[in-house]
Amino acid sequence: MDLVIKNGTIITAIDTYIADIGIEDGKISVIGKDIIDPLSRVIDAKGKYIIPGALDAHTHLQMPFGGTVSSDNYEAGTRAAACGGVTTVFDFAIQQKGDGIIQTAQNRDKLCAPNACVDYAFHVAITDLTPKVLEEFQSAVDYGIPSFKVFMVYKKEGLMVDDAVLCKALKKSSETGAMISVHAENADLIDSRIEEYLSEGKTSAWYHYLSRPEFVEAEADKRAIHWAKSFNAPLYIVHLANKEGMDEVKKARSEGYEIYAETCPQYLNFNSDVYKREDGRNFVCSPPIKGQESQDALWEGIKTGDIATIATDHCPFQSYEKDWGKDDFTKIPNGCMGVENMYPYMLSEANKGRLSFNKVVELCSSNPAKIFGCAPAKGTIAPGSDADIVIYDPEKEVTITKENMHSNVDHTIWEGTKIKGYPVMTLSRGKIVFENGEFKGEPGWGKLLKRKGRKVR
Ligand code: URP
Ligand code: ZN
Ligand code: ZN
Image (tube, rainbow, N blue to C red):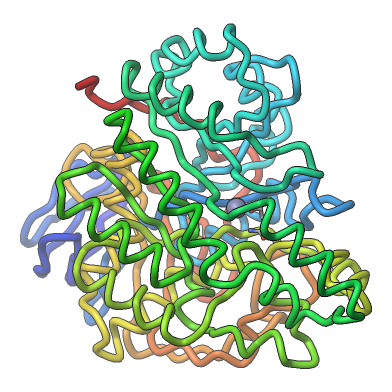
């Protein structure tokens, strides 16, 4: 064996127990009591928790957006991921008009492969659903790219698709084993509300929130769910942030539909009051962070199992770029950071007793692995699985500052947040990539995952 982790408390989505873990060739080779191998390196993890690395199913690295490019390139973003216990990131490869699905992912991989410090996969965002692209769904699934995204917003940015396209994609996904994700907000309503606020001279970040309030997101959630039901297709709603949408997800699930909701740590930790702050524009993301009632509904959805995953929507921009919108909220590049904060924050909430550690592992690791076709290699601690492991010290306390984070961004919305318990080591396929606050990995280590599609009904 290459490495033995001894005496730690192993926590998966379903189990908690003390055992040793043997690692060989990047995989967990054995789990048991008193594993002894005189030739292997030994880490004593007594008093520590051993949890599977998180899978962040939603990042935007080096993404051209909002008149600039998100500030974390593939190296910086996956470095920050490793330092936050994330061992797999799912990034979005945006289809250029005329390109195919596999081509889109391959083009993006040219940027990613030499730089990724942890494993990664692409969801392909479809912007141009030609008959040829529709026909390519099956080969993309067979190739190992079974997840596609459509935006119901961002008309001016050229990303939006209409309902007819969404429906075609849903129908085809149900026939091919693909999964469609949606960014759900009502684009027309947003545009008309923006126009109204700007004409009244209402230009602060607060009006970003008011131009896309709860009901603007809820309508699109309901519409997307309606179409998914109509075509008996699975649906994954990214960054769900509002109560009415949460209620609709709950209802559809109780009726037996395969609807998955993802929410993000920023929606769980902050409420819309952040947009009244002096630095409110740093919190500008879409959908915006909602009111307290929505935040409470999301936590309730976690409790009831109607939130399937937590992911970050990591899409940082520098302060000077956020400042473009000082006097006009529509000029603020949309997006916030989170890839290094998600797992520590959720685990800290578990450490404070709000939910169980097993539930955090389920939301941040095992569920995204299952939903997006990379279990059991990812998302658990079991013989045969990849040795993507976080060693977590429940006693370590960290206050987040931009100085102790590892992204390429000059601020963090998490500044000053106190975290109870923290990862002290991250292993990516058995290699130490983070240890005691320091990044120890290397660009180019991360591998592209080929994933399985869903069973066709
Ligand atoms: O504000 C956000 N979320 N920016 C990234 C693009 C998206 O909508 O996910
Ligand atoms: Zn989005
Ligand atoms: Zn996003």
